[in-house]
Image (cartoon, rainbow, N blue to C red; front, side, top):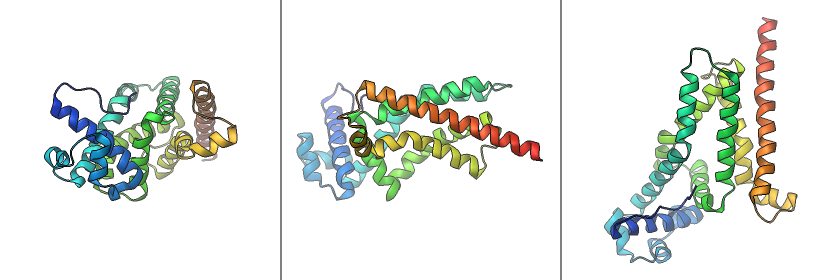
Length: 231
């Protein structure tokens, strides 16, 4: 679950990884207002290394976006493959869908409560509010496919069409159960009297979110059933 570039063998690749890690921190904090001088200093590299390895600050920014896309892909690949396997079955097993949604959301909670992913979250949060071509890269490569898979799972469980806007909105709201603990990090730490998201506190968060997921899935399925009976 390490959200910093992994060790590499060549000096050049190590320099690039170090620059991306530093750039994620600086871009996450200051966006494209971050300076190449500060990025290079944080990475312990000469400022010319940015031009040598990436060409420009803008290209380094896009390299950070690609790194984030690769990180998300790597961490959620097993969940995506499981979703595809479940959805390809002639008869979809609702218990398998529920279990996968719980497992994937629990993994997301673990990632999003870790200090190591804070810079990644800051980068994506900035892009959500003021999108650049970097967001399009992340969205197309990982967010859209994963969001679509989750919407299909929710749709199958609740007997709703996955392409309906309402199903997409309900799925996004379900994800909000998890995202609230990253975007509202300081609020919950202060309100709960916690000093950090340690393993015990993360377990409490997972239990609550798990309950909410069941409320949402069961409530939507029940609502859809009632609507069907009325017809």
